[in-house]
Image 1: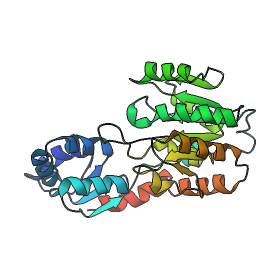
Image 2 (image 1 turned 90 degrees about the vertical axis):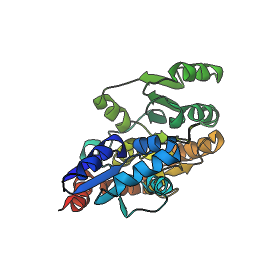
Image 3 (image 1 turned 90 degrees about the horizontal axis):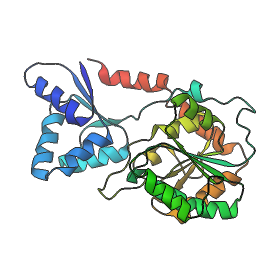
Image 4 (image 1 turned 45 degrees about the horizontal axis):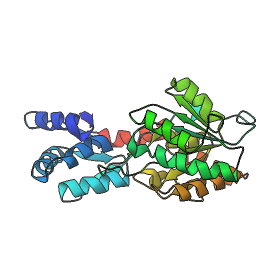
Length: 283
């Protein structure tokens, strides 16, 4: 049995091998490899994708969105399961009182690239700060747009007392910041290449910690976040709506949404994910 992740190039290698040797092939499709094929001319991308999928016994997509784009690529809907990556819920569980903070804090964790939507987060933060002057935003990560985003923060007059650019941090420190934040935001967009994220792991990590999550209604995020039930969804690329949702999350003092978030994360604990995934791998 071979379990390949990413349709290109791991899935292709397994499919070629399957042409000559019989084994069970389970392919997990993530957004990055899928976009690579979608960028190719259709007369190349579609036959290549069909070659791989037809030499696969079971297809697993990380989100409904990825399944929809896979269907678009193939020209037909494959028999597939949906299974995103899991989370170690115990690692992110917060004990009572551990997450108490003096100021309302918003945390972003991710690369500084277009599809992460940090530009719109900064523009939203301008309004958030006007409505909630004590609110603070921490941006963890680095990337090709780092200088541009620093310049935008300066242009918006969001000084270091409002927006902290933390750079890349060790995972242990990211976990610590996540435990002591008020809101975690994932403002992803569909970028200029027509691409977006698959399923940001930080969403499940935040939910496991019982944090209020504000994320864009894009790609796999709606598979996890139900607006007003276990988090908030914002229109992608709309800083005004993102600001409204962030303000609502900051002002939420009840335990209903944090409790629902923890319940959602528990369904994706690695023990649960592995149990479901094992069924795909059975010969």
